[in-house]
Image (cartoon, rainbow over all chains, first blue to last red; front, side, top):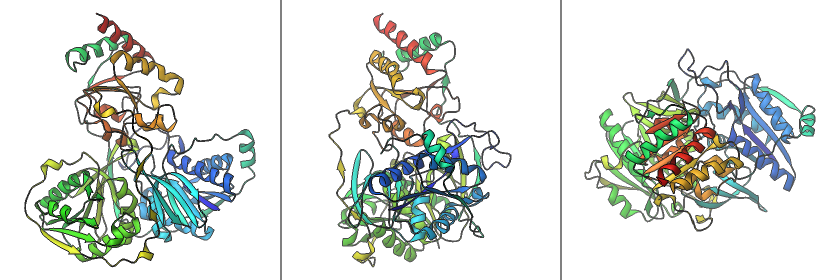
Length: 254
Length: 324
């Protein structure tokens, strides 16, 4: 099975949130970047499918030069080759625009299966995978915990709300968005890191952006507080005693 | 092109209650814009659901029925709703932000060369749609800039279903053209993994732990605090993903929804998926090292500090208070 994993590079979770001067994103100067966590689970699922059933795993990432470090890491974990879609203007493309860039780069590969995380840790739109499937004209299923090849296609386990699940059978080629927690993530081994250096990392140009976006991000800002939070300060023991006071006289659970 | 259309969600004849929050959002948006609001129920055998919708202040309550829509498939829903929206020519199409909507609405928007504005937490004049970025650390204003319909999904708890205005709507049946061959996926019956043995929704006090705990071996300090308080132990998704606590202890959109007297969040940053599961708590205390963590937005009392120092001190203080 030929599997493409579409991954995204995002700021690390504890990244400092300072609003950029244009007011449309955060200051990127001091940011460290990493693989979007749900995409790491998509990669893990792909690697396990390959180990069980054979095939090839190709990782694809769109973005500036810096994203190649995330692609190298995926190669070190066991992906066979990588495609870097060079684009410095992703911030100026909406979901449809980004999905189109991915579709144009993935289509020539004609994969049997495309996997991606269910959403990104930074924008959290949770739709690039579904839009990509629609653009490629292939079926999709979202929030997938488990993937099992059948004779003619796939049987996947889809997470529903409130602890419910559902199996869905679907033909190939198909696209799945992967939920976190379905597998245990692997680390790159030293051998893997060494091997990654010899693997193919191809750079392709992003297809040109559409003339206009369907939706526009106008500005970002720190959220307004929904509640007035009373901050308790002091040494750990002082804070602990203040909390106990609140538990006794305000919350009344002691 | 005008009017607001709200897509209601049902499964097997039972509502997803978030539909009524989306309906309230639709009514309010329509009132602001001075246009009509309508709603649509999709499936098969949904006449009684449509009557319920028709008792709200709406122009029309559409039913989209077909025997191929009895079980949800993205292909069936996208095709049927595409046909309806082309007929209604709606300017805005609103959905509750459910797992099912996440599965088909982006594809539906793509059919119209539009982009779904997903997981919206507020709608301001303009209209400007507010969503959260970076796991809730940042808000962003989005505006629809294309000429086609604007697709929006509304986060749970953003609008109140009890704010719905009642009225009488005309029920209008719409029969979409669907062929069995269009439905590429074959859905199975929904199931539960195992009987849930932990019912967090009944717990008066919950101590909940998140990523900040670092590793599994550190969980014991939180367990001791929970036991001192006589509380149930709960967690955010990453803790359960790692297998450190069973999935049935997870609070959030994919886990349980709780509303205890006290929710004590330890090392939980407060991503929206977690907050929707606990923001009904009577009192929230948050302990986190990051003063910008979004959990503080919903906390009554906050401690910015090292949980490895604060939690053991708190356990000791609780024990002393209870012994006294």
